[in-house]
Length: 183
Image 1 (cartoon, one colour):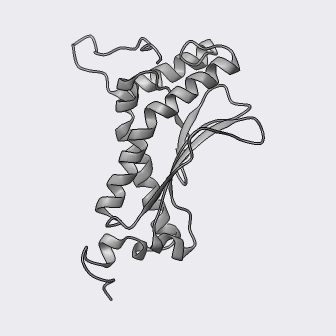
Image 2: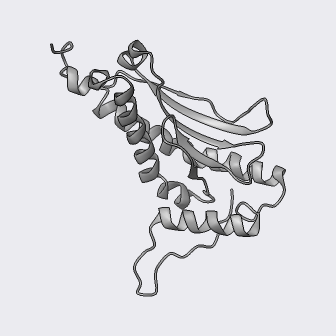
């Protein structure tokens, strides 16, 4: 398990610094120092990334399950890839939520993706239609701080998928929990 990377937990007036801000501070510090949470070599950065994926996984699943429960009326199928290497030497992990209406419309599922491209300095998060968010998760608390971000990415992704098809891909809008689609 990684040690907590130092980051401010409160401002000078004692107010807590939001997790998304501390994540960006870590990200910008890593850019400045050419590190990723203190790791310098590609191999060490990939080890950190593997732990980040492990820490994020339950939260990515939670964010997608929330959408499935409340908007897709539990009609969705969640798929998780785990850590995998791409042909170009990068490393990634994916969490995708698909459902019958989305598949019928021929559009991509809701996706949360953690990736560390072969030519990248450090890893990022993204959705299927929402791109590039810094990924700097070095502790359980850091991963918990990402839940609102994962929710935002997944929610924006679903919103954008509606624009690719239409509102009828959302079961909570077109049918009751117990009944068929409304006309």
